[in-house]
Length: 78
Image (cartoon, rainbow, N blue to C red; front, side, top):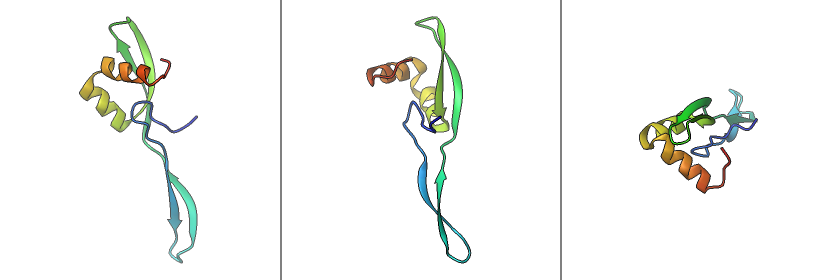
C-alpha cells in the first residue's frame, strides 16, 4: 500500500544514506501514516482514512466535514 496521506498528500522523501566512509546508498523517509476512523454526523456513518500526523492535526483544526468536502471535491471516493 502506498505511504501517502489522503488529506495532505504527503509522500515519502528520497535521498542518500551516507556512511562514515562517505559511500552513498539510496534511502527513503516515510511519513507517519495512521489508519483513523472518523464519524460523519451528516451521513450517520464512519469512514476510515489513511492520514499522516499532520493530516490528523488538519482534521482537528478544520473539522471532519470540511475535510471530507474537500476530498470529495478533489474526486476521491469515500
